[in-house]
Every structure is written in structure tokens, then in C-alpha cells.
Image (cartoon, rainbow over all chains, first blue to last red; front, side, top):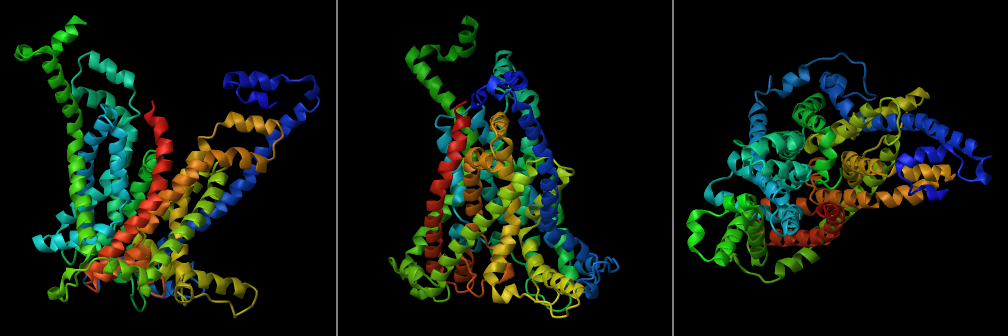
Length: 311
Length: 322
């Protein structure tokens, strides 16, 4: 029966319905029935197990959201008070109602750094990806691996000279310096992702357009964009997420002026007293853009995160 | 054919000899191909390679910014310190332990989840979305939630649930955990496994779904057991994906700073190299020593990366061949 393996799919159906050998005729129907039943039985069990595990993994997120809507006294109980009254107090507190310290500057800094660095990354990465896929340079694979190798160098191995440079030229606590850092941090990943998306543009269509005398702009708009646009959008979202999440560079290179949201969050690291609901509210607010971006890019997330290696 | 050549050759160039002309054109064409690549390449070299060269230079210097007059060439002294200083040696060990355990555990759980999600069941899409959520919480926020809302010994959720479960059986003496002070490394590993399992799950799920189903069906009809199918068909197919997930994960987790910084502030033996380097240059102002430790991290990463590149390459060359 293993001879069935190389059979093309269209031959597979008929081959299954006719019993391959006379010897097997008696047993085949039973086995077929079992093969059809097995998955369904497994599926119910697998479904329950998957749902339980999914809920277990989601508990910290759900708990974070629930606690953020509790009062500080309800948040700090043992055993937990799940059904406590809901309130927006923690959010008011986070936005500085009593302390007067507003997280808005840091959120705006994060948005500025993430969005502008993503735009810069796209502007640099798109032409590069074009030169690595649609009209590839010689030895383009070597160039690809050079890009990737820069990503493998840990940030800590370059951060001191960057810090000293920024201090010398007066770029410390300057959002533009951080934007440049984030651009370099995401550029290699973006080049890899975009190349894999651009490589999906059918070659025949490009050739046909060239023979028809279409100019570059027209080819970009009419042939490349429709195929690669979802991928480019996913690349942008993933770069946005990485920049938004970054802490080490922001902590070393920024201070009171250009501090980003993760830096603001570190203010909660060793907080004392009743502040649990506020921590949760802070975590929710700061994670919201990432959650939206991530779910928006969900379909292309794997291809992006695996640098295009996994489709 | 004649129209094509007519279009390419320009009137001005007719004066040059044909071979020169062709060579010039070839070179111009090659540069036209290269041009879009150059801005990205130059930018990246300036911002990543140059600083690393500086790190390399500083690593051979005795340089503490608090006593600048003592700045001098130090030879390999900083490297000797990195490898003999108990704190930094501990940091090397912590980095390895953290990376290996987080990668292996999240790969295993991720594999289990991927195998479950590969089956059809009610609400599969929603379950998948819920499972991705941990990966989409800002790392600092995730670490804060683990520290304060889940692991806090007095009002954290984990101890709260223990109290609740024990009270169901009429007991007031529920066991209470204090991972953060009793097993801080466990706390860091736990929170990172939670964040990275979805990543592994996504890659392995994509691997499972690219599996040729006709082979599996044929094996099923042959009466192969589910374990046999898993062992002899699924696992060999997934090998590349397991390697890819493990190595990409390792590259990110070696560099982890957020979880260590937030959960334990590097205390009680949890300081990994990125955190120790941050401490060494940011607070102790030991620029030379920090740079040497940075170079050590790079050497370690290169060792891991060599394997990573090989795996990525094996998946990549199939595509490059097209």
C-alpha cells in the first residue's frame, strides 16, 4: 500500500475507492472507516485540550485587563476578587489624575520613534529588496546574509560607542537619534521580509510588462503593489512592534525629554503600596498598539517573524 | 530583434569601439542594479559595523570614565577579567542557562500546541488568536504583570488561586509560593517561556501545515499508528522548522534585557550578560570591561549564528534556486 505515496493527488481518489489487491479487500473498508473516524474523535479531545491551554496562556492577559478595571483595594486581595465592581479609576490614575505625571509625552515619543523609524525602514528596505529579488544584483545571497548577520550582533555589543557618540555630539535624549537606532535595528529584518514578499511577484508578469514598454512607476503600481502590498504592510507592522517594544536603547539613550513608553513603564518596576490596578492599566494602554498591529498582521506574522523562511 | 538593439544603442556612444561600448554599458547596468541597494547597505554599515569596531578598540583599553587620567592600553586584561570575575562568569552561565531553558521549553510546549491547533475543532481561529496574545504584550509590560499581578507573594494571582482552591476543601493553610525571591531564575524563565511559546507555535504550525498530506493519509491507510506517523513522518518534516524556531528564538533570548531588568533587576544570580554589560558601563563606568564583555557576547552569538545561518540557508536556497 505504500506504493500509493508517489501517486498524484488526482489519482489518489480512485485508487482509494478500488481495493488495490485482492488480499486486502476484506480489510480495506474497515480500515477506511477507522481512518475517517479517528480524526473526528481526536478532534474533540484535541479541541478541548487546545482550548484549555489557550485559556491558560491567555489568563495573564485577561487578568491584566480585568485587574485594570478594578479598584486598588479589590486588585490586592488574596484570594482574588474576580467579581469586584468595575471602575476606570486605575486608568485615571495612570493618566496622572493625582500624581500630575502624564504618560502622554512618553506615548507620543514612542509613537514618533516607531512610526518614523518604520517609514525610514520602508524607504531604505524597499529599494534594497527590489535589488535583491526583482532585478537581483550578482551575489545577492551574500548581501542577504550580510544583512542578517548585522541582526545577530547583540545591541549590547554596540551600545557603548553609540552612547559615547551621542553624548559627544549632543544627541543624547534626542528622539531623532533613537529613530536612527530603531531604523538600523529593523532594517535587516525588513529587507529579508520584503524580499520574500517581492519574490512572490510572478516573473512572467514582470517580463510581459517590460516587453510592453511599461515604465518602472507603472510596473511598481500595477504589478508589484497588488501582489506585495499585504506583505509590505505586515513588514511595517512588525517593524512598528519591534520599535514600540524596545527598552535597552531607549533607556540608555533617552531621558526626561525623549523617554519612550517602555521607559515610562520602568517607573513601575519597584513601586510600593497599592498600585496593582494602575500597573495593569499602564500595561494595557501601552500594549494596545502592539496588540492591534499584531492581530492586523496575523496572517503574515509567521512569514515576517521567520524572515520569510516559512510561508 | 533589430528594434530592440536600436532602442538600446544611443547615438552618442557610436563613436566608441563596440567592445568598449558593451563593457561600459554592462558596468552602467550593474551599477543601476546595485544603486537601490546602496542606501540601506551604507546606512547599516555606518550604524552597526562602525560602533562594533569601536567596541573592539575600547575592549583593549583600560577606561573608566570616573578616572579618565588612568585611561591606557590594557591588552587582554579586560578579557581576563571577564572570564575570571565571579559576577561576569556567573552572567555568562546565566545567559546560557536562560537561553537554553527558555528555547527548549517553549519549543516543546509550542510543538504540543501546534499539533493540537493543526486539527480542526470548533473555535480554532479564536484559540489561535488567544495563544498569540502573550507574544503581543510589550515585553516590559509583560514582565511587570508577571512581577506584580501574578507572582507577587501576597496578592499575586498564582497564590490567590492556591488560597481559593485550598479554601474549597475547607483548608486555610494553602501553600504560598514566592518565586521572585526563592527561585528568581524560575520566575524569569517562566515569564519568557510564556512570551516565546506563541512564536514557536506559529512557526511549527506553519511547518505542520506545509506537510504533504497524501503521505500521511497513505500511512494512515497502511494502518500506521498516530505515534508512528508523528515519529517517522511529522517529526522529520518539522526538523527544519524546529531548528529555525530554536535558533531565531535563541538569538532574541540571548539579548534579553527587559525581563531580567524588570523582574529581578539582575539580583540573585539572574543577571545575564546584556544586563551585566549595561550595569558595567552605565553605573560602574567601566567602559573597557563592558566592551570586552560585549565582544564575548558577539563571539558566543557568532557560534550560535553559524548554525542559525546554516538552517535559514537550507530553507532559503530552495527558494533562491527558482
